[in-house]
Image (cartoon, rainbow, N blue to C red; front, side):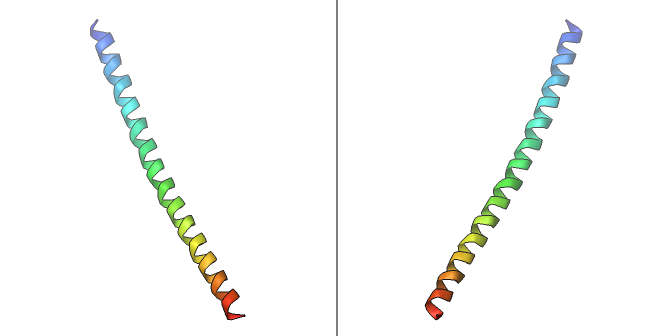
Length: 54
């Protein structure tokens, strides 16, 4: 029984670490996605301005 609790605690800790890593990755991906969408908006704005200038 003592070992069961020990193993459970270790597994729980490992799962929490994995969860933390995944949240960090998710945050990085969200930042990257926001960056890409901002650059796309900037590109579309600049292309529409180019059309007006022609």
